[in-house]
Image 1 (spheres, rainbow, N blue to C red):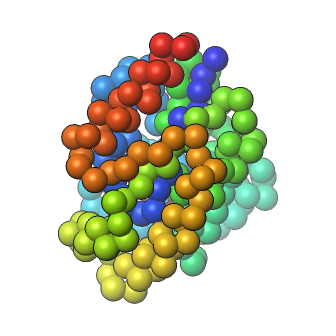
Image 2 (cartoon, rainbow, N blue to C red; image 1 turned 45 degrees about the vertical axis):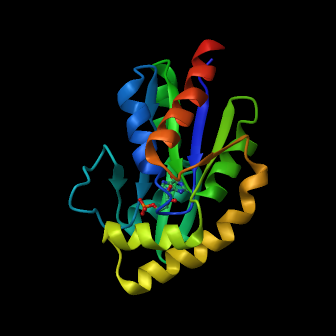
Length: 188
Ligand code: 5GP
């Protein structure tokens, strides 16, 4: 049976790096490509990193019950997991990996309690998180503040997760993430 492997974290905690590493290493895994209304970043590919939708298209899909879960993650910016994306990956017999926000992860866990393994990717501290977000250079000051405010609130959800992965030293975090996946594959 396919598992839903959720990786949730405050923005900038490094979960995208971890998720990309796992997808490259294990053929048994596939990425759940989310829909979003935010603008594409220069290195991102439509249909691979996200499906980039207009606000109207996103609202239409909400009305048609096209999402397993969706969130207005930042004010005016919507993100959601598409039902037909999950069906497609399920049919391919893959374990499905999610890069998702904390609330979205907990909603998926509620919808599929037996299939879900939810991992909380934790930055070593809020200061480290702020430093990383600045280094990444993708956000202006207003967005940085939005992301930091949200991160502080998200840290409180850690106890509701099945696994916690502290992303301090990247090599160690990647090894810990591999251990989580290998455990799932062994029990397959
Ligand atoms: P970013 O804009 O940095 O790509 O993502 C912002 C936040 O939205 C991240 O925490 C990311 O994991 C989350 N996110 C991405 N896709 C989804 C989704 O389908 N649903 C929810 N609830 N959050 C998502």
